Length: 88
View (spheres, helix red, strand yellow):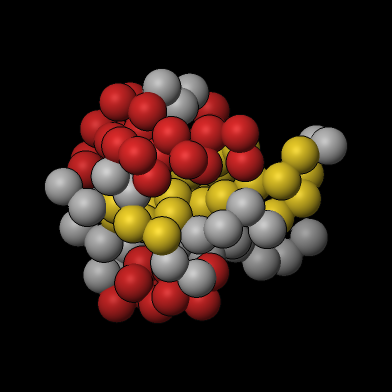
């Protein structure tokens, strides 16, 4: 099981966040997130939002550190990328 995580560069709600993805399946991602203790509400479309305080925990559990650009590439090439729907 391999999941990927980008650096905690994304601000929100007074914290910095990382994104965590799988390049195999959402099931693999959900299983890893459960092992990490991530709440289901942290899943958004195709990734989990991981607070910077849990970044090291994810890496120690086996998440592979990649750049944000690499993370999107892996997700897209796996066919698992779900973009935000447009429109107002």
